[in-house]
Image (tube, rainbow, N blue to C red; front, side, top):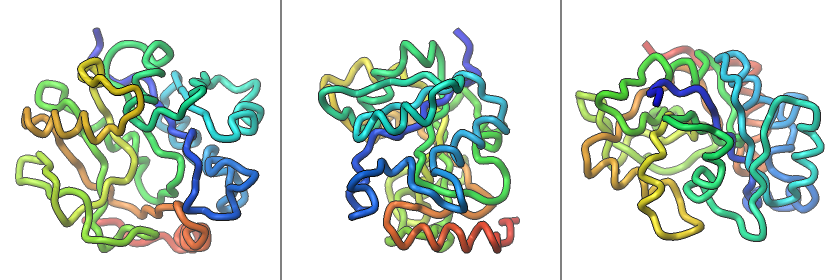
Length: 233
């Protein structure tokens, strides 16, 4: 089994409740930022990174997402009757993704600077890592409040704490998903197991990142695209 990630899971099943009226009749992944849907921004990152096996999960207003992707080389993992969250959704999509570690990417963010998937690929070391999360310093996380999700040690291992925000992009070995008994669950459960094994790592995105989880995030993301922040050294 290859330890080089060759497939990507793009999460597009969520209800987008924080978007309020904007997602009453439109899935969050189809909200436009800078003239195109969030989902297309995410797929463009996969295209540039050369990831050919792509899977998108759907649940809320699934037909809209699936119609948008019709005729494109993207597999659909439809979650019915219940939404499965990130962990359950990834596990359900594994037959489409294939064996070995995979990229996962949330579709509700906008990026500037280096391609986040390429950066993860370059930093991935399967001899040490079970997951590699892409992070941004909390003070550079547009559209996001709070002190952060993780702290990074000098060797790149991460633990729960303040300082860095998870961007929604990672490489992960999904093997441990088989040990979780719930049907619907967050990937946080798998990360916590990996952290206990000292195999949870992080790397820092050098460009801009904006969470488009709330209506005001749309304008913030478009302003960032028009005037990208300086790259981290």
